[in-house]
Image (cartoon, rainbow, N blue to C red; front, side, top):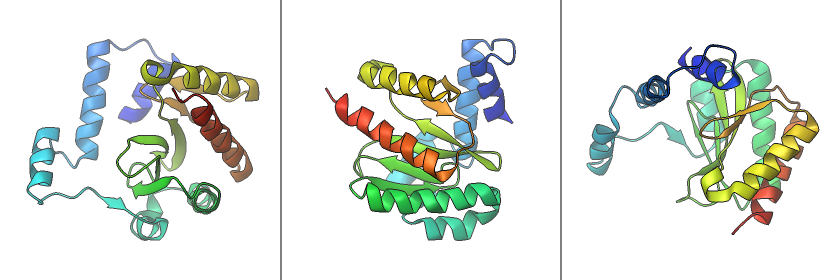
Length: 185
């Protein structure tokens, strides 16, 4: 519900939320996603070896625990997209977790560049690039999305909530990777 509120605010569906309130809501969402632990406590417990995030190294382990979190169409799309990523983009690193069933990284130490993120029982797509660090890639991606008629909004990532068939998702992701590679500084 909180994610939808933030999304509706970003899309202009509701009256604008004060920036302070918006950041408070986002922080609270992160607090919930961290099993109600503050980041400082999570970091301390992680350093002490007490806390391990709910992260999986393969789609099968993720799916066995969270099969009911998504609808059948979303689960099927994730499995097909995972096969595609493993086959066509074997150089990328994949992780799986409760809120982002598929997270794509350039290497194990880098931040995510893309995520299939849960939105209720559906999936939305997070293209994680920043205007600050890669304005060229952001501009190219937005131009591509506009040309294809995809609806999106910009927040901490470029977020696309449309439902795609697997071929459309593959084409979109392939184009995104090409944009990232061509825009490297």
